[in-house]
Image (cartoon, rainbow, N blue to C red):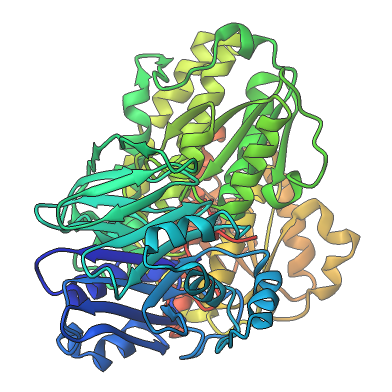
Length: 610
Ligand code: AGP
């Protein structure tokens, strides 16, 4: 996905746009561009392959572009390789219309061929350029009218920022399946892909809905729905500060967000724990509906999916009902067996992941009740689900999720405990015990975070490995999935998480002298089984980095070349602690390898395309 910023006001637009784009670079960073409208100079556009800094240097931080109205874009390429030509904005052949776009125009080839048949020439390999040329085709003096025609013609997903040289006082924005926030300033107004880009200037925002079109001027913002009817947008005030979206002295956002986990966990969990009860005020699922559930579905992508895998183990133990965890990209095409008696829980940090959004819509289409566990307030998934539980982790900027993962897990655990009380599948004492231990998790996270140098040392020993296995059983296996993904996505080392008991059925053939195996053995009921798997790989020459609890330290040390120890806690809460050293290990390995930790290659923070 990509980042879009739009501004209209009294001050020069280019520096404001560059500042906003810098806060959106995590959304895509293979090229970037600006289009600024100046009454004398007209429409000026500058764009370039490479990071935002390349663009900023080209325009001397924005000084060489004059004008108080403009749009900016930072790209994650879908159609057309990263290049100067394919970078956004895209200019219509008339030279009077500039467009930036996030999403995919699915019928772009059909429209491109139609326009080429009309003698229109194209200059890029992108789907987006079709929007610029189609605007030109429909334009008869009113850019808003032309935009309405275009958005009713194109299919797929779009968040659009549009400038027209003949309308030097207005910026047009439109969205469908691609986030766009509107920011209300004093004599200036903004649009952006997310709040992070505009919170420095205003905390008063509203969130565009699918099919809406907005006209931004210095005086205000007028929004129309997909029937071209004016709508009054509800405004809200952002409840966090710009400092939350800055590094605050840390070298990387990822490390900052790892260190923020204890506080994030407190914010997500503690307001929902009242004595020995869970209070989910924002949950609107009736007790009768919960009691009739004969199974649960958890649907998500990536790390959010891994939270669901942990959740399966936890909720099946709490509720004694089957919990199906499905990848959103699979669920949506699997003809899922859900109906009005089903509950589908979708998990998403960004609330904009297209696969997860599509799965949510599929579930609703089939009559299921839906519950979203989401971090970004007002995001598309949060708005479309029947019920939403926010994780309140604050902005997560690093592409590799950490605090969002931990807070999702906390909320999902509380949901399970709430259901267990309603379904009467756990005693109040059992529930109270877990809640008591949840209150201690932040302090135990802080204990782990107080000696990161040990993990940094292990990373310095192992960063040159080209293939690393994570093995574990039950909850440890679920944790291995997340540890492996963290390592892969920021260090580019091939890694695989494997159920330890399954290793002997094939994959153990890959173990040879020196192969690094991260052996997770925190779950006490299966500790001895885990040790036998460690012995299996050791006997084939593997190097073992063990992960266990304080109470198993001595035994695990006998079988490990290096050992990470986490504090003991309730078995169901072990993943909340075990994930922290795995995040740190991935971080330090990537640091040793000189990788771009906050913006790993080929990735983006939220994947709003299929
Ligand atoms: C996690 O570190 C990755 N960045 C990625 O797997 C992410 O979890 C996935 O894309 C889902 O994103 P979401 O939680 O915003 O839906």
